Image (cartoon, rainbow, N blue to C red; front, side, top):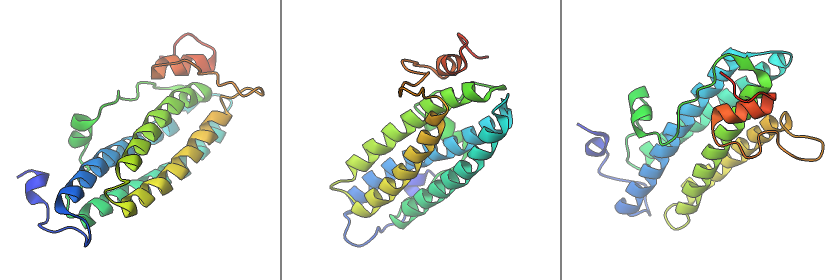
Length: 191
């Protein structure tokens, strides 16, 4: 039986069932992205090396914890709306529209360059979901706004390592994670 068949026959008061299904679908995409992000952050935490190791290593754990909490809150909102939150690894991989994080053991700045692109994509998608809830569910929108505030702060922490005194990002113009990692570390590409 799939998740839609298992969904509850009700939703929260004041929301039409069809609107609730739309919100659940938006939130399921966000749940996949948040689960992927917290795993990616741990991957970076485990594989960062170099002179900035400890600063980046310790900066990431609070981000992991906060993103895991965002995922939990998102899953609980899906359930409250009568949906079935799906958080299995296979579902994440099958549904994702982004590339897997492909930077392994690398300098801290290289990882931060790649992570900046990860945050950019996730924040852009979160903003689209937030805007889509304008006429559907302001409670969900409020949740997404709160999450965006934290995600944007985390990206600011990352970008502080990539920014020049003049405000330019070392990763400017990068389109792939490896390209961003290479530009951040001053190398053409990071393996």
